[in-house]
Amino acid sequence: MFNELSEKLENFFSKLRSRGKLTEHEVQSALREVRRILLEADVNLKVAKTFLKNVEQRAVGEEVIRSVTPAQQVIKILHDEMRKLLGANWSQLNRSKEPPSVYLLVGLQGSGKTTTAGKLGLYLKKRGMRPILAACDLQRPAAIDQLEKVGKQGGLEVVSRVAKTPLEVALAAKERARAEGWDTLIVDTAGRLHIDQALMQELTEIKEALHPAEVLFVADGMSGQDAVNSASAFSEQLGITGVILTKLEGDARGGAALSIREVTGQPIRFIGIGEKLEALEEFHPARMADRILGLGDIVTLVEKAQETIKQEEALKLAQKLKKAQFDLEDFLNQIKQLSKMGPLENLLQMIPGAGKMFRGIQLDPKEIKRVEAMILSMTPQERRQPNILNGSRRRRIAAGSGTTVQDLNRLMNQFEQIKKMMKRMSGMGKRMPKGFGPLLG
Image 1 (cartoon, rainbow, N blue to C red):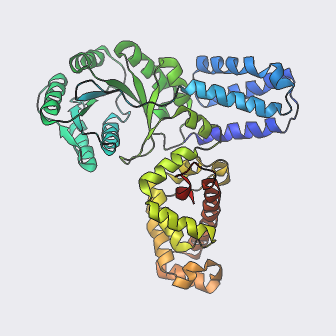
Image 2 (image 1 turned 30 degrees about the vertical axis):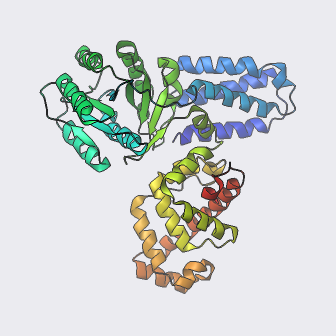
Image 3 (image 1 turned 90 degrees about the vertical axis):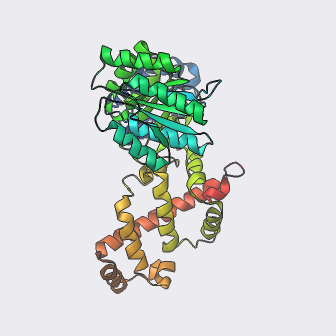
């Protein structure tokens, strides 16, 4: 997520730190470099200008120029201003005084609304709510089938095929939710390839009839300024209350995330970081600023760990790490656990400094079986003492697992890197608030 932007900023910070004292001219030159980086990340031009103006007003003052560590001061100012740019702290979704609370999902075709409806439903279900989904996209032939499939995957009830117009379906879904005790209604609406009056009229009618607690604009995070422009148009014509950015599991340039709140005046509420229904994250501006600037996001990492790793398993692993007993069986178990938490590259970005150290490491779900085959082809002694894996042993293991010696060598290199990462996380766990430490060792 935002790997290219983060890497460019990390390189810029490294150069800045090497300069020692900074003159006003050098600060302004550095900010021109930041401007270039932001524009290459597809940040809105007006947003970039305002952001840099705010940074410059603080950075050229005596506080920075005469500071013992002026580079660090400039970096801190950039960090503070980026937090402001991304918005205030995350807050819970609004709820209606009387159930059901309606969440109306809107956006252009292809932005991921239907999948997001399922993700949001599962997110709320895990937090004790009783959500039901409404299939109001009657424009796209496969939309209803897709929502029903998504609902089945998440164990969510779906209201569909009960009327001939989107408005009638929406009203029927709200009535059913009220009658059957569902406290939340998530409405999946139609989109277009572009904004048109017919779409806006349809959405306006649904909004006026349902009185939603939230109107959430779903935007494709990979589309950059197109997402910002469409969010602005929806905000002006429909009145959105928040944004959900999707498809951020890849290397999105970051322009939409850094621009959309400033342009629309509405916060980013969630981000989609994968195809699985569990791949929906709350958007915490301060944490995201830390991630983009290479400072990590330990709190989110811990929250993910708490959701997927059992406490007793975490404590058992912590003890093994303290005794330097982390072996290949532990490695296999951790790979399986990490795969449930999302793309490894995104997880590494949450550990301060680790994103750069382990850049390029990927965890392809299809490869987990190959890794498992290689480890299970080893003897118990080899799993516990991988240092004894000489050439003949490696050839035997590769033959027994249907892989190559090169595959096994690559696995062992990854094992060593993950081992270093786990040690790093173990050290961080000692500095975490009470209750977090055991999850990180």
